Length: 277
Ligand SMILES: NC(=O)c1ccc[n+]([C@@H]2O[C@H](COP(=O)([O-])OP(=O)(O)OC[C@H]3O[C@@H](n4cnc5c(N)ncnc54)[C@H](O)[C@@H]3O)[C@@H](O)[C@H]2O)c1
Image 1 (tube, rainbow, N blue to C red):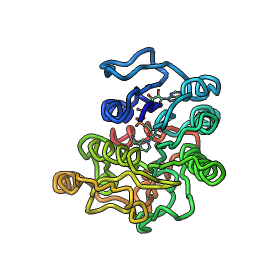
Image 2: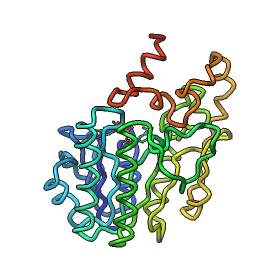
Image 3: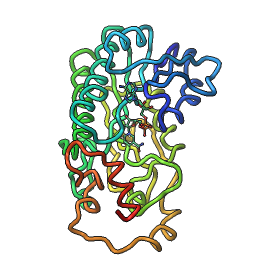
């Protein structure tokens, strides 16, 4: 593999992926909105660029074999903000990838494309979308675009419906939804190295006993998560209060994003909830 482009390289997840991706290619081009990145690998270069800028994406993606597209607003925001970074950003990446004959895009989708399904529904990778926010809607758009570019032009894509990627498990919801950083890296590596993927959707969760999703149709990718949130269950459940079973923030896959008004930050909502405000 000659060149991989990684968008969102300065973000929480992008930063985890830089070193592993650099090992899979001759040249890794990392991009984000910040001025510079720390610890740039020998075969890595950094370009400051906005994914909402069509020309910048066209230049950046030229000569790439694959694009790992993680650059986006990772929260609910106004439609205009989501439109620029997430809708236009994804379109610019797919359009440039197609024009330059890129083989495959690995896309950071999200559970929020399916967020309004109740937790009691064990969701599969081929059920209809049910977004919970403008943010989730942008992930539905990009997944459908990935499917369309595969059908029309043979541009492959793996859409990773990431649930809750983080360090150690922090709350009861994450007992089902946790994706450890090691498992995230494995999932992206398998998505890059699989000989064929066509158009594939996979949920980004670890090997959690309480996982509420079904990845069986993406088993051919060879993703076999190693971590299990159950290791944290005793400690987490001991400090979890009884919750209202009618509350969508607890009952839906999207968690608190299922209840925030459209356009209002879900991340801030979660922060206020944990501070008891
Ligand atoms: N962290 C999770 O649990 C999680 C869950 C589901 C999906 N995701 C998706 O994974 C990706 C990375 O998430 P993260 O947690 O690292 O979030 P993050 O906010 O830490 O990283 C996102 C990065 O994208 C960059 N970005 C935003 N708008 C941009 C623009 N217009 N042009 C260029 N860069 C832009 C930001 O500067 C940031 O560095 C996002 O697409 C997010 O939607 C993350």
